[in-house]
Length: 508
Length: 81
Image: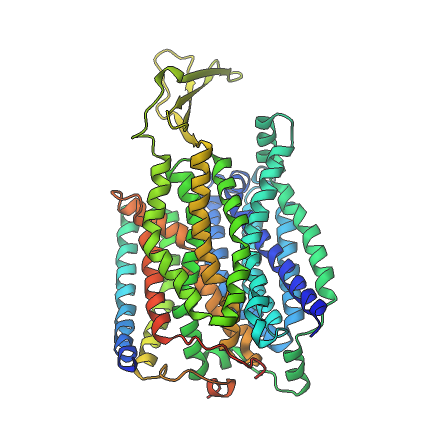
């Protein structure tokens, strides 16, 4: 195949997959804002739908999407199937940006959002397997890892793009930052959703020009495509054992390393370390930017040394270093052992009358400075009642910390190291999965273990890790036992059962 | 190496029911501690999606015990049986 043609294949596949990840992540990144607009706590049905939207789309629907679209991809072809997933994802995302709020249409708003979110989960479940298969089936055997690694960059770049567009939009709606943020929370959050339609349009245009995968087209011409891909994938022992091996010996560990490095790390920095909203996001953005090229580096390297040991080394490093790395993140932000510069403490009080009540909203912002340059900002809001003797029982207190440049850079380095592990486990995995299964059931067979590994084991990482910290409150790092144990089991299974051999022929 | 693979198969078979037991026990305790709809949904989702996976791990262990991973397929024909 000509270099320009393979570049077009990679571009068409990668851009579309990137957009799908972007679409999927903006919902998660804007979860708090969306909850305020569509899922008010005061309505129990809406709150229930909110929980369903969070859990169902990410973890239950994705494997179903893998089955539905995987089957379709093995029956009608890769090109049209991953075109369909792109249209469903883009259409759902754009529609989320248009749905009137709960205040306007009541409970219909959260119901529609839930449905659209389910469509997003289904589409994502079908996209990745198609894109990876499509690229791999165009690639020569000695460059399969390299070519498919471009697909592997898209999940991280999708997150990068979503964080970037959200931050830019949040800052651009007014010259005054607090007014801009207020506008963003009110209506500006819709912009990242609406922008998606342009990105999807461009991607569809590029993909329309592409031809069907040559291997699938050949099978189709010869009448050798699968009649029942689901049955052949999961009811035949010979293939089922490889599906199980892919899940327990590779994707399960890869999923938890992926989500710990990119999502739990950010959640830990923001919620446990209490680092400022924007600093916590820009730390992740910089780390992603520096680490992303390594997907391609490890993908390419896997063509020379095999996929297995690169992935398993990434898992091993994650297992042995997660606790010290997260401990270091916590130490950097911990102010209990730092010396406060008492004389520099600032306290600002704002009083805003609440109309027609006689009451006043009091906001006290106190800023503590520490010798190491870190600042601790505490914003306490309560109501001063006109009625004598009545006081606020539960003042709202928000704490955030602003790091100095050196600590900020150190956090970027730590998160970079964690994302480097992600690039090791994730860079070669598309080629690894493609090589495990035959062409006629490849889309179905590789999609399911990938989405159980990523969507279920990986996607649940932030929830289970946070849950563990609420059950075992004595250890702030207890949440890490979930990814560590899962990755350790996967590592053992991978060492024992996975082969390091590169399949020279995926045409069969 | 082959003996280790088979022996480890027993471990994976045992790990499945242990995981299911621990999951259901924790779910019951957590729901009893905080019986609100969010907690119930979260734990029901965990139980519903992890039980089939645990069964999958047991099947994987069974295949390992039966020496199915001694020789991995060389071509697609090998997985079509």
